[in-house]
Image (cartoon, rainbow, N blue to C red):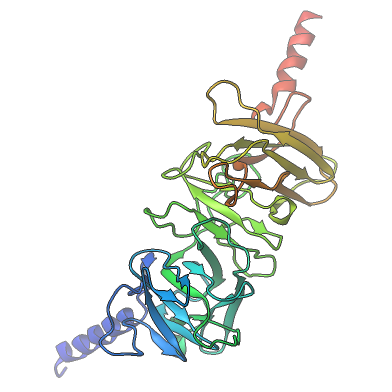
Length: 388
């Protein structure tokens, strides 16, 4: 028999090493994701690999007559021409993840930031346009979702990278990044009879508890994954993902604030039966961020559209709406955008808009409403039959 314990011990070491090699990164900030750790020498940033000219800027730092923007904390990273930073993370191949980060521009309005994930042979990336600043703070929090590619040797190890694709006249110019975090995404089960996936918006990207600006969801029309599972941002402007810690939310902990009028469209394709009648229900509210009225939502369901103005009664901060439609195909598009280009009354520059939450599509079984009235017409029929 020899020494069987040697064999089993060897197997144990092998399995332990393999398990350690593929342990996934936990939800939350990446290593030194806020760039707050002071580097031991110039050109190095703890936790990050640096390519090109990358500068750690500090709160209050000036460039000429301009004070550089540090989104959060005391430090952030500025990426020079064709420069970037990256960090190795362990992810589950084929699963969806979202990266949340803060970003600001410095010298030019046309600055952008490339966000990518690099696997063994695959690369997913998106360019985030920093031209539009959505609030007077001078920076915004963004999120980007991707499907994790295969890592080297199938280990699950990939690299999350941020790069400056621009070539400015001043090589020290470039986008600023800060507060980088990651979260694994799940597609929640649909509630009974509701055809909408994640209609309450509770599943979404990582949000920092001390961040009061929400998280912007840029367009993901051509992406494999969505930071808001089930939903697509179709347009060239973002919508804002908000939480109940800093905003008024109709239900639960999360909702979506619609920005920039027709330039910020949120949509989902739901499975329907042709010629069957359905009811689209949703909540419309005010985010509690001093957004100037009037506020209104344009809602679409198949070939129907309805303009819903926010006009709550008394002290209510939200109201419900209902749009009945007849499906024409096996998949029906449900979409929302803000009718107006709203700004905050306290600074008249920060973009804002109505909040949408608790979206549902229900089968209409009779002429009295949505899925929650299923079977009501049977009751009416029986009552009439008894009377007669």
